[in-house]
Length: 416
Image (cartoon, rainbow, N blue to C red; front, top):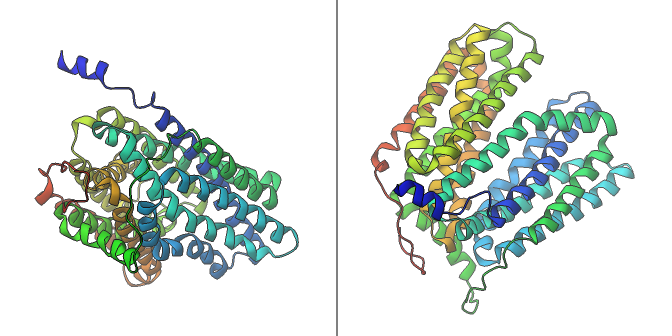
């Protein structure tokens, strides 16, 4: 009877104008990002005759801004009005895309790197602003369900994105693909005007050194919270494990399964479809499971699946394991995002995100960079077993904080 009452009393998450607006904006951004990624990848590969150095620069352009601007972007996101910040970021992204498009049209093909670079910089200001708005406008008990919805959206585009990007580039060419990206960023900015007006917060006069003080406060806040410290450790271990597995997936296909490189797309499609289903399942039962438990389960199953993939020489077994791994992988992302939101005060959530996010991406890039050397020194079985062990240690790191409850945040920024 109480459950029925709560369901009637609690507004539907999808019925929220805020959630509808953010989801629509993200759909548009995902279209632009996937079209951009594959257009640039295929164009550079074609232009340079598959030069590994030129292709690797694409990843540098996409990931380098995360290290440089994530901390800064998170700090400014906490200082600026989040709705206005997100709109301006999308507008500036659209403008920069069309400027680069002109440069490409007049012969400077290397400008394609700027498209990814500028977009990645602006996303470091926009993404933490979106987290702040989510914290403000979504009830505490629906945060995890909201994160599951976004994970499902990401999974949809992991399946459809590569096909959409490849089709757009193959059919219309580079310039049209880049123009599509600029157009959808512009449309996203227009959609974001539907968001509720920003709350005007009283801020004292700016004094010298205030930005530096607020910047350091983000690190101090994470360090003083046992839950966020453990989450940072899980970020590092998960990033290392995911980077290794992603970098060497192709060798699993060719060496362990004895198939051609093209077979990799089937593994990715199975994994993406399972992620979509997994995100939906978590969205249905999100209120019943603590985010720490979600994260631990995701990493434990990820550990087992990673080891099996390394050992398996059977195509059916590998496909089944990839499906199971995709099914639980949303638990990792949803658990992490929910913990950041629940254990961070609204006024500092941007900085917390700015501190923790580079840990995952940074370790992923490090392990991807070392994957080639590891492949020369060890067998795939040993490498994937090691990646599985990293996942397992990350899950064990959740044990000391498994029963912790999210703090009741006051108006001022408390010590967690």
